[in-house]
Amino acid sequence: MTLRPPLRIPGITEIPPSAPGMRIGLFGGSFNPMHDGHRLVMEETLRRLELHALWVLVTPGNPLKDNSGLPSLESRVRAARAFVTDPRIRVTGFEAAKGFSYSWQTIDFLTTTVPDRRFVWIMGADSLADFHRWQRWRDMAAKIPIAVYVRPGAARRALASRAAATLDYAQLDETDAALLARCQAPAWIYLQGRQSTLSSTAIRASRNLR
Image (cartoon, rainbow, N blue to C red):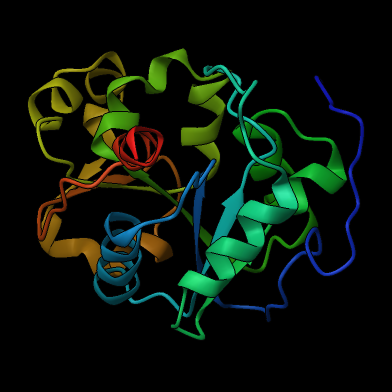
């Protein structure tokens, strides 16, 4: 298992509270910065998947991206918390405290430590398109249901992706979204709906031009 040096920051890297039987969405990313497009995905998945809570997992750094200019974990967590208004959404950097580098480590830890919670992994369609590049992505799909939310311009690439083809047999109809958290993995769903053209990359670029 690949581990980063643990980074524990009081009030930042604790695991959010939960209770047995809760349906909890896991929405990971760098969130540099969090924006209305993220809010839209969180609102829609909370409602349509009938989740009790959604945990925003602010990653120490994406293994597939250049993280040299990434702001500190603490600053990104605090900014995301200031942005979020729904009390069901909890923002945490707990992966850093565990030294996790990859999402499969997070899923393995949570499903083993609190197996009586019903976790759902939430990702955008652009992430599904590249999901086959994630370390141990098949293990992730085998352990936790996955909700994929549409992103502008990514639908065709996502649904034609290697991961989508591999997991075709486990795809649920969109009308069964409320059942996903109760399903045994592998199970995944592609959610159409409201879309936002905002991206963290574009926001950072616009700030640099000012």
